[in-house]
Image (cartoon, rainbow, N blue to C red; front, side, top):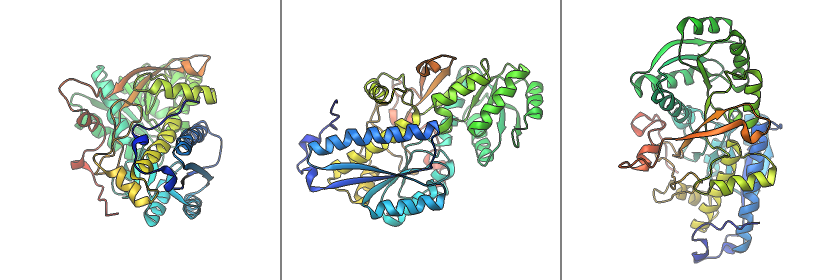
Length: 406
């Protein structure tokens, strides 16, 4: 297997052997959903590759995975992992991120959120020990608005519902009306328990160019099926929860709505990326698991990679030193997206590019999505890449996060 040595590790003055065995704790909900299976695969692949690197440097690197059904159980699992020597935590699915963040703060170790895009976690519920590899809802919505508006699609209809629907609606309005002058919201409707008849009638009357589904993944699929049957022709896109970024979700969307499901989606990662070392990463994953690398797998793998690098460069497995490295403005991380990226100091969100894909019916999972572009275009002449990345999501002046000391 190819050895993935991090640049500069061989020049470190101290041996990894002095650190001893490093452990990372991952807490995930039980079950075999495509997103969770992708996460487990990403964690396993990261552990195998970086444990090999650690062995070459005289140490060990392990990822311990535990299942927890509820937030309370997740906190208990996290405490158990710390007791077993975990220097950091990874997870954040099914509403478990706040519980894991509280354990991380109490234990003074970093928690890498790879599963929850909620803006609340980057604002009033932020935590000095919580870092976000998963993009924020604000980043996703800004990216969606930017691409569609620049493509000339300016009239929008918002369909929202579920526990986070109201928050997503408010942030979508900001993305469209305050950040993209010329965009108009011609209608919006809250839906309950997938009762879509009234909203479909309202869309027919409003005649928007884009319908934005701010709904949980299963509700997005149910809507697409009904939307297809009534024959409306506005483009439809949906909020990219981790579960809604998998090839399995794409296949279901296209099965229920071959025409309207074949639209554009924003994703955290795409298996067809072939620049910046992405081709090699995607190829290794495909060879190992026989599947394209879906975004949840990418996030899990990068969490392992970032933590390995933090331990290697600090020559420590002590949680507060790892956290300090993640916050260091001079620390940059190669996540196979081009330039080295860093965590924003005001909310500890990883600044990074997102991608636009176009769905199409296909027999093979690989062909269900085609890469359309990168959001934003970070190498635009005459601009600073970090400033361009910070165009996605809330800027410091808009942030409600008040991080305490560590």
